[in-house]
Image: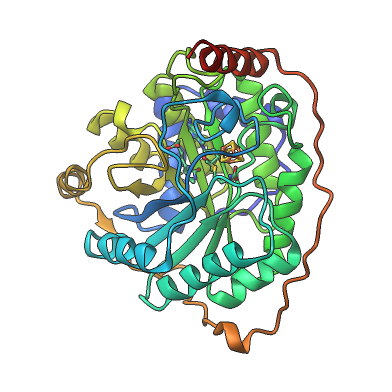
Length: 367
Ligand code: SAM
Ligand code: DTB
Ligand code: SF4
C-alpha cells in the first residue's frame, strides 16, 4: 500500500500532472490497483430535488437565478416523488442517490425536515444516500447523519486563488468549514471540483493540494469538466480536451490513493476510448442517468454497454463503508437550532459575472 500524504506541494503535483503521459498512466494505474479493484466502478444517480433560483453567483452554474439560463426551476420535490426516482435508480444499477438542491445553505424548518425524510426513505431502500445542499452547520450535519446520510457533497471547485474569480457571494473558507462540520459525523465527504473554467494548471494543482491536505482525505473526489451553459458567465469558454481530464484524474488518483475518483460532468463530450483511459488512470465512480442536475449526461443503457465492453462491474452499495442506521424523526436526539450562521459574503466584483447579470437584466427589460 502506498502511504497517504497530506503535505503535497503545488510543485510536486504539477510535476506529476506534466509527466510524459505513459508514465503518468502507469504510475496512477499502479497505485489504483494497490487500493481498489480496477474492474469495479461505483455508480450514483443525481436527482435535483430543488432546481434553480439560487441566490449565489457561481460563474459556472446554470441554477444561479441572476443569469437567467434556460432551465426549468422547481420547488422542493415531495418524498414519494423522490422514493419513486430512487427505486428507478436502484433498478438501473445505481448504488447511490445524490440529491442536489440549489441552495446557498440549509435553513432549519419544514423543507430541511422534508429532506431528512427523503434521506431516511432512501436509506431504507438499502441504497447509499448523498446530499449536496450548500453550506451546513454542525447541528445540521448531525441531523443528516442521524437520518442515515452516507455522503455529503461539497466541492472546493477550484484553488483558493482562483475561487475569487468564480464566486463573489461566499469564500473558499466557507467550503472548508462545511466539510469540517460533516467530518464531525460519520457521514463520508465527497469534495472535488471543476476543470476548464479558465483556471491555470497551478489552480488545478492548488485545488488538489487543498483536497489532499484534508485529514482524512475525502472518500470521494468528483472531477467535473465545465459544462458551459448559455447565459452563465462561462458560456463561451472552450471545452477542455480529454487529455486534460485524463491527466487530472491520474494526478488525483496518485495524491489521494484511497479516494473514489469520480468522472463527473462532461462525459457526454467524451468518447468511450477517452472514458476508458480515465478508468485506467484511476477513475472508479461516475454519475449515471440521462441528466446530471440540469444538463445532459449519457443514457444509462449506453453506460451499461460501455461497462460490458470494458468488463467493468457496478459497485455494490456499502462496499467501502457500512450502512448507517436511520433514526426516525420522533426518536431524534437533535433539535433544530434555528441558527443563523455568519457565512461570509465577500461581495467583490467579478467582471465576467457582472456582465452575465447585466445581459440577463437587459433581456428581461426588452421582453
Ligand atoms: N448548491 C450546492 C452547492 O453549490 O454546493 C449544491 C449544488 S451545486 C450545483 C453542486 C456542484 O455542481 C458544484 O459545486 C459544481 O462543482 C457542480 N456544477 C455546477 N454547475 C456546473 C457546470 N456547469 N459544469 C460542471 N459542474 C458544475
Ligand atoms: C458534482 O461534483 N457534480 C455533480 C454533483 N457533484 C452534484 C453536479 C454536476 C452539475 C453539472 C451541471 C448541471 O447539470 O446543472
Ligand atoms: Fe447555487 Fe450551488 Fe449553483 Fe452555486 S453551484 S449557484 S450555490 S446551486
